[in-house]
Length: 109
Image 1 (tube, rainbow, N blue to C red):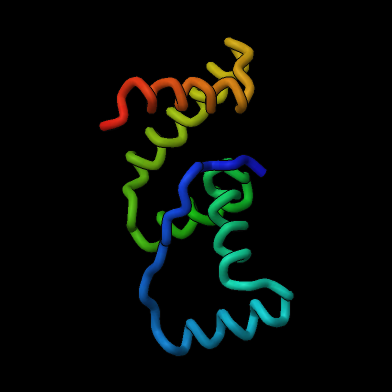
Image 2: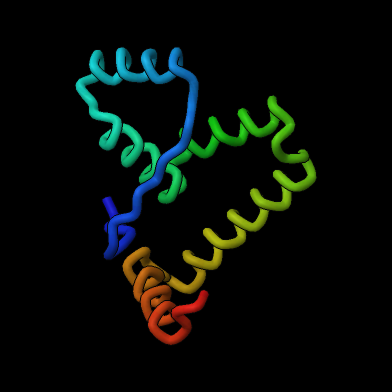
């Protein structure tokens, strides 16, 4: 699991009482805390886990959150990015170093 940040940042959102209670029941059954659960999902999303990305794509399509044309463009850009990583032999740690350098040189980004 990658370390995505040097500072802790609170992430929160609102939902219904019912969904909150259902979540707590399922988490208890699975032996997870809310923090662990959301960190697992966030890690999978950031690392582009195929199952999580596929679920989100299906959800966006079924709810109309993103048009099919835009989804196709995004998917093409992601594939192009993966090809470039392979083409230039870039490892995740090297890419992370590049972002660290950019962040130091351009903290306003």
